[in-house]
Length: 262
Image (tube, rainbow, N blue to C red):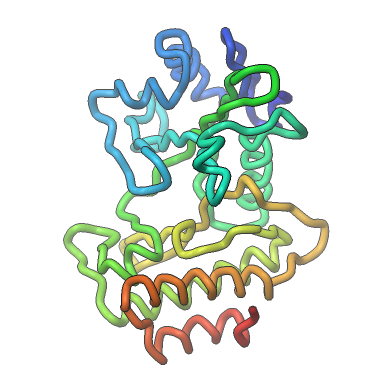
């Protein structure tokens, strides 16, 4: 594994990866004591468990770092492969950690709001497979789009989402899809769980997550398939929860993405 620009190489027994210079000491100490970053996060006294696929923890960032916390996430398989492979990936091509770090950094450079990657480490899981952890900056006062729209979860404890907030969140989600398109970043799995809605002093805003399957293009990225994927995700949540977004919500979404596709 090669360290992407802006990172240093991480090498430990059974582990290879990269880390920002400010994260190196924390990563080295975590691997030396616990073997993996995910295991180290489970032993952090002040770790906070977050919603997501599997257990995701926010741990205190090292002293001297601007971030309040870092999120430690183990890559887990989805769909039919989850029951068979769980957290194993084939040793072929570029590891997901490196793909996500490079895509995330390129997206941020092009103006796409997404949490900064701090480190990524892969672990040997036999001759054919690897497991991997990624560390990103934590976004405080935030909730994923699905949680806000369909479970009435607030980004901040003292601000329960209103109908206007939900309409605005849908407009932000559509605008985020268009931002990805204009920046030339194709997100292969844009859905209501990997759009983060956060509370700011000026209202709510949005960031995109999970760029491990993203492709960074020289030109604009196609908007229609990303909008269609996000639309299907929202429709599915409407069906499973019985919560209908309504005409105002869908209109706000369509004003930024264009007509429905797929």
